[in-house]
Amino acid sequence: MNQHSSTDWATLYRAVVALVIGLTVGLLCQAAARYAKDQPRPTLSPNDRSRFLTIWALGDYGRYWIDDLTERPGWNTIDKIYRPDVKHFYSSKPPLLPTLLAYEYRLIKWLTGGAWTFERQPAAVVRTIVITTNVLPFLLFLVLFVRWMRREHGDGWVTFYALLVAGAGTYLTAFNVTLNNHTVAAYFGFFALYGFWPLLAGGAVGWLRAFVSGLCLAFAAACELPAVGFVVLVLLWVLVRRWQLALFAVLPAVAIVAAAFFYTNYQVTGDFKPAYMHKEWYDYEDSYWNEPKGIDAIREPATTYLFHLTLGHHGVLSLTPVFVYTLLGLMVAVRQGGAWRWLALVTVVLTVAVFAFYVGPPPLEKLAPIRRNYGGMTQGFRWSFWLIPLWLAFLPKGVAATGRTAAAYWLAFLLLAISAGSVFYAVRNPWTRPWLQELLYRYGYIDY
Image (cartoon, rainbow, N blue to C red; front, side, top):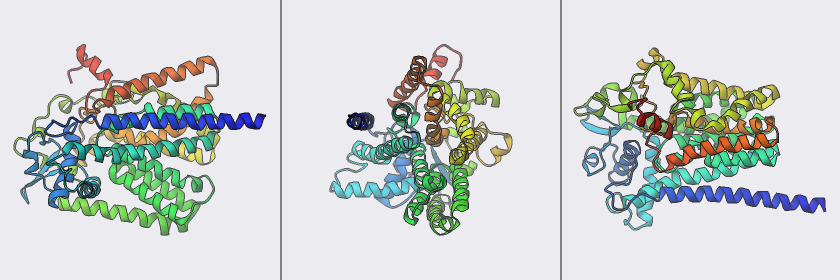
């Protein structure tokens, strides 16, 4: 009878997990499909529009420059550069991801007999690319994440709570409705970690799994350059565990992605430096960046900026307070030792490094035009989103450490409710003010 009861609970648990994942993905698909068909362009901001312009130029004309396309009604963008040597405008976004998506666009045109193009059905094209680029990887992320947490923690409550947070309590969910690099980097970074985890935890993985995981690892860094640190640390760990695998499976995979990254970048900039390192190319006639406005024009002290990135209007802990459990979980993991201690140290190092970089000590301004602008008009601290899967990995440990009292349950759901509220406020358009910034702005505490 106990065995039968256990089987019933396991079946119920799987059904509930499937329901949560299905509802989350379904809601996202619906949100991604809300682009109005009668609009001249179905994008949500200059940011995603800049990426779609590259896809359009490559998919229809086989080129990277976007001059004439930006002159179409509703398709201009501030996220572009002008190369005076070739007299063309280009997107300022790293070109590898749009290059890959241009092949998807060509496939869409072929499958629809040319009916779905940026000229004829831009909304249909944009919706399809957004769903395949964000929502489908998000679905795979949720499935693998809950499997990993269930296997590592065993506790159904903490695993289920972690799934709720992963599905509805982080800004990855909100940004799944728009084309961006942050969600892609987060998912592929997680896929790499999931692939390598058995080896990192003292077990073994096959050569093919190591190669594919290496591709995912490098692609995460190609989409979010600060993730290069994650690549280095994981490579070192794999090298210590099994050097043959690192040298003959993982490194070749990383090299393939790196070659593609630099090749596509060369097609745009004429060298191997990313576009944003050519500050002079932003200074063309009528460039928005010559006289930026609003949030792009602020120059706050580093201490003020850091406060708002952590506890203020763009704060990780103020907007998504469920990550308080991550802080507790990191401490638990350090005491636990083994692979979890290593991953905890990696997570802390990468998190501190990302915040330090974007707060922007003066020497870094020589490498890139660092603006303390919170990523522009955007929900949350988007430059940290690729770290969210790492933060989620430790959340169950923090939840478990608070116990199983009624007060602990109420606190968990309160933190989740606040976090989910921030996320679903953002789903309508992630390229807008967070609700906390909107309140401060409306009541005159800030002017941006």
